[in-house]
Amino acid sequence: MEQAVPGEAKKAAEDAWPKPLPDQARAVLSALREAAGPATAEEVARSFRGGSVAQAADLLETLAALGQARRVGDGRYSQA
Image 1 (tube, rainbow, N blue to C red):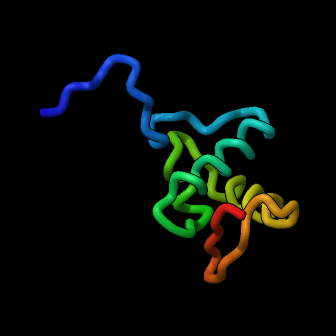
Image 2: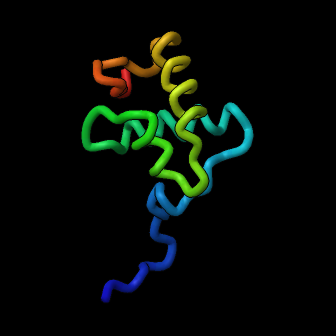
């Protein structure tokens, strides 16, 4: 069994979905950066405790419109 190292960063799935909208946008961008490849809104939301698929989808569309994310097809997004 692995022991946690003091000060070790938490995995995204252990983080709660942020309440303030600016924090949600930063969290979605961070999830895209950490993803192994393009991700769906469901995958982004699942990476947070209490994540909302609908909010993640809205944020991904908004970030794509602002040039901060890129829609790559099939409902998947990557960082821009």
